[in-house]
Image (cartoon, rainbow, N blue to C red):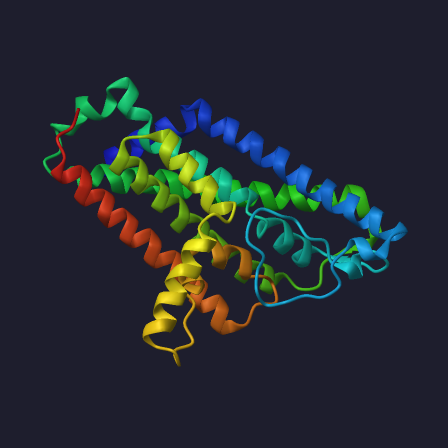
Length: 281
């Protein structure tokens, strides 16, 4: 197992897709902050251009929404990190990387050459998951650092740090959610042997295309149990990524942690089962 992990780590840091993904993380972090700054500038001239009413229900899709208080007041580091990360941009890059990395060895014959040496081929999935987990960690740290640097450049003294502990809790929860999402895309890649399908599925989920499906399921459950207050979206990766903010309650934060862990664990187990039962080619 240790040798497998070493090989996947070597493949991770020698892969072009790894460094291109990290470059895209930098570009998207700068882009999202710049667009937030554009919204703030527009709101200075037209206050109605920003939404002034907030709801607990997250909006589906990919969006960056500036806080109306930022127009005249100071901007807290944790708030801006939370806003940019909940946009779904980093989740999209996580899905794209996981899909590419999970299927990369199919093209060069790597998996076929070594699969015979491992009777329990499920260990191939574990090493792959470890490499993806490290990449998601690097992406999240890089996204956070570049976001903070860009904010300091744009807003200077208006940008301040209130408390570091809530930021760590938020980043830890979001890491587990993004890792769970990447693991799910990895499973789709292993199951379908298709990078394009898995990548597209991940992007569509981040874009909110799964929301109508959630609504249908909720309606079916409500028809069966009218008095049951159930929303399947509360237990889905995409909704939790967009819902969990710096100000989220402990219950919501704990739910997000469990959702991320369960999605990651189930996806890895299903991928292990799939590769163990399938003929390698």
